Length: 255
Ligand SMILES: NC(=O)c1ccc[n+]([C@@H]2O[C@H](COP(=O)([O-])OP(=O)(O)OC[C@H]3O[C@@H](n4cnc5c(N)ncnc54)[C@H](OP(=O)(O)O)[C@@H]3O)[C@@H](O)[C@H]2O)c1
Image 1 (cartoon, rainbow, N blue to C red):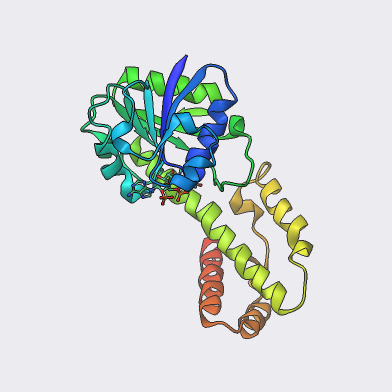
Image 2: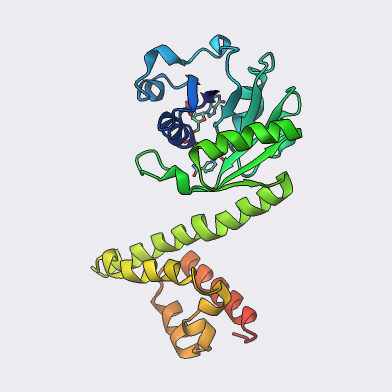
């Protein structure tokens, strides 16, 4: 049985907690967070505390799932603990926790929102440990909740996180702009749902390079000009131009 305490009450903390709850081989010692309302939503009053001085020295692993900027301050509160301390951040180095005897990273590569259900068994968990035995411990914890656990060092993880920003955050922002254009023209965004699904589905059988279609790839200058004209917002025009230029330089054409 692995004993785990989760520090934080946000999106990742909640999904990790639910994943641990689903397996009999992990025992949750405590959930710790400064937000009392969020803590109460875990429904385990006896195992939660908002007082960081009450963190029990009883866990094998402490998972810090707080905002990146708060990791140093929160990890200080765990300096006297004998268990392994790991953060869940894609963008932060393992060395942020180097004051601890045993430390590491437990980064779940997925986009988590509190009310959006996720099958954690399919979430890749990227782990890094300060020693071989810490790596083994984190691998064991990861394997209890996911079928996809990977050793990834800090430099690779930061690259993975950067890549994830492009494929998820930026793509989602483009969905937002697409939705805005639909709303302005009294069109349901749902009409685009099959296209969105096919865009992602296609990547299972082909590379992003080969999957690209559209006016920029075809070099269809008339359509590109007409789209720029249709866009009312200067920033949207800039995004359209920049992405079109990037596509054209990728395929060896000039705008
Ligand atoms: N969301 C994702 O998709 C995702 C995916 C993989 C990894 N991660 C990583 O997981 C970590 C948590 O992300 P999240 O999405 O769960 O964030 P979140 O939903 O915004 O939750 C952040 C948590 O940190 C707490 N917090 C912030 N500042 C604090 C401080 N100074 N002292 C104590 N607690 C503090 C917040 O408490 P309050 O409620 O009181 O503000 C909240 O419990 C981050 O390192 C993030 O990079 C996120």
